[in-house]
Length: 344
View 1 (cartoon, helix red, strand yellow):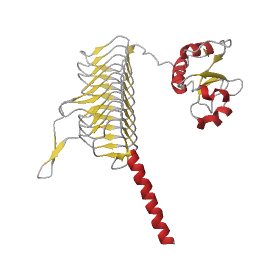
View 2 (view 1 turned 120 degrees about the horizontal axis):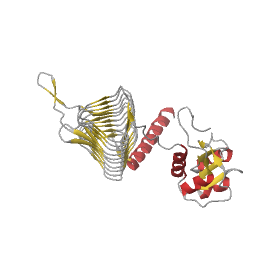
View 3 (view 1 turned 90 degrees about the vertical axis):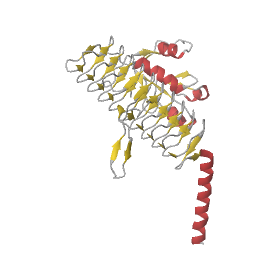
View 4 (view 1 turned 45 degrees about the horizontal axis):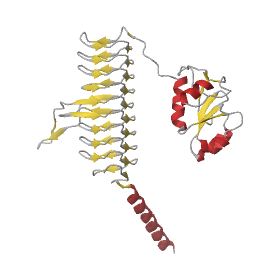
């Protein structure tokens, strides 16, 4: 069962030969066979293409009714009869490339909806699609071939590079964004940071938040995520960073190139997240810390100290993963001993 055509337009059918060419594989005699779409291994039918990785998925592979499966050489012998094995080194990566044949990114439909509000001095590049009730503020610059979906907002002075995608109800303020940046539904960029002092009388007084948000080329920000602008200086999101839904990034945080920030992570102000670091779901990062390049922070970890590069940590407070696992094992043994003493 492929993608629902009500929501996902298909460029299919696609020939087996076209898929082999996309994957860089040698053509075969059956290259005239046509396929309708892509689907998960368990749901795919005879006209669908699926992929399989990992020995744990062998039962699903043997039962699959897919017409073609992208698969590693070591598992090719298990492909059911009548199914075409497309042998590749990285099946999931190949599957993405094949899926793009059936469902290429939708190009902009150039034009400005009559309900959009665009400042007279805003610059709109060629080939842009500006949807209903979009707002573009004074002096803003929108690069070529961008899509601004309905009810999105680009604040005064902001800049969005070419091929940007701003989804419905997302907003951008005090922001300079590069090319190919994506804001998913309801993302909020450039909010006032959570910066204030408390007087002797107990009154909270907000500090001026006078910085910007700088977003590098190809970064993606998930639905409902919030990125505060800098208090002084900038909040920086590196090129190619992937930020999931419902993430909070405080003022003056720096996110490195290609970093991955998973849902419900909270990063306090002025923290520095290194290139290609990974923060798993609901992790919390205290302010002014440094997470080194390619470090990995486990789900729900509470990070209170700097993390060296290429280090895995788990727990709250976060420990190096190997140390934490040994500690947990000892704790289990201790708990078991105490239980046996009480019941013995």
